[in-house]
Image (cartoon, rainbow, N blue to C red):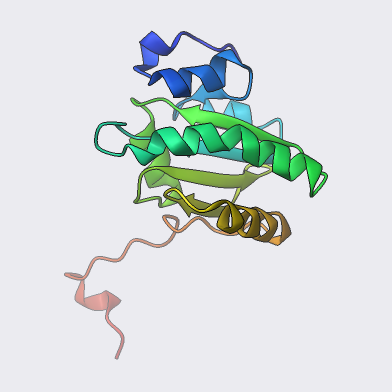
Length: 156
């Protein structure tokens, strides 16, 4: 997958630095599955608009540190991606994320958890340990749609 310029993705400078320094790649709803196909522990940053969500810039700075933590303390490689601004809403819907910024934790293409918002370092350490220990599960957005107007769907 080729990294493209941040201008094409309207990335904040700190987010673009993640890409330029090789800590992450850009993904959107069309390229995410291709990126996930390489397997392993994966985190996708849903940064949102840094004007509306200024802590997204802090999370972008922490992301490479989380990868170092996963490798150093837990011996696991963590691959990172940043959802493009154009693709982040579709990715968020797919995995049931409703808060920005968020780190979607995925493993071998399956959903593990979402780490929402900026956290204290000790909370990040605990959440990384928890995510690495958890199995993949159904993403919160996946399920059977319910139509409340359909009387045949009611319980008796």
